Image 1 (tube, rainbow, N blue to C red):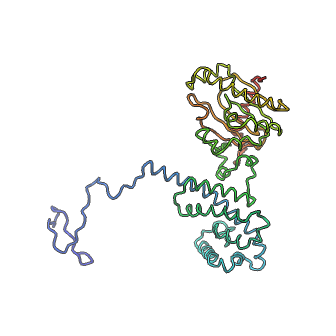
Image 2: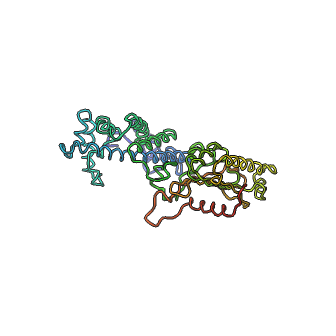
Image 3: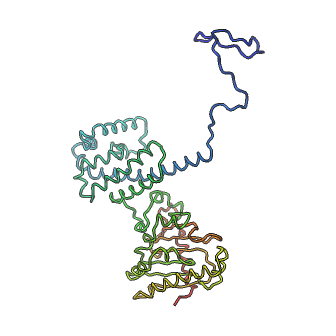
Length: 413
């Protein structure tokens, strides 16, 4: 008899005192399943499920880094502008005073969360023991909007600031609730964060950021990957995110080595090259000799007809010669050829300074250059250096290889 007055059914037949009959009024209990049988639903995750959650985590992690940078920067800006106005009168309660009657609800909620964090020991850094540290991004924005005359001298366009913060709000809600974040929304958030940090006067101090914006993740963990800041499956995907105009436009120096240099010749007009050279840029182009045996070997590797690749290289060289002929100073636009086995193609933009960017591809046996993986490198050493001595990255390696090949090559008249 159970404590509730219900009679339990007897045990299995054959056990001592057992009977196969169930008395009336007894509660029927499920019998144990056979040993080895599956109990409950399937809990294992398959490969597709793991792939999905990893993708979610990667996107959420990138978004969190951007949001964290923006929130910290915005908090610092709000403190720098409003603290001198309210703190002399209201002391530690200056944030509550700045929120005013319109913000009483959310600022009191922040005060309550701060007190709970104090009691439970969640405040690990004394610098965070203030109400401002517990305000969210929308609340920081509200303080800026309420006191815009105080912030106006530091910003050109209030609407641009508000639009950037609006774009971040979707991402903030998704990340805070650990929901799926699409690639499109992540890209929008990264662009908005970069723009907002620039407006808040917190842009990167890396020299090459003028041509290749420093990514938030790269800025934090760049020392793990030397100077590689981008990897693309092929040249098509590279050009979608990194157009030739962004790469070569405004370059003061351009060094390129490869077989036919199609990335430059076919994607950057001769008129733009002429203008670039006339504005003071120095160009050195190193093609594979179209008459060399290395071209014939490459044709066989790619399964091309005899002479097909050599004619393509010849046409590119002739095009660059016509560009050079239009210049007042042909010496600023040098063209040379080499006869060695081609190992890689590289475009080094401003490679002699800290503002350098390089696009590098290795030659694969049966893969055309358009289809080969692409590395984007940043010059000037690593973005983030460890505590130990700095080391040269891949950029410097390819720059030295170019100089060696250039010294062993011969000019094209």
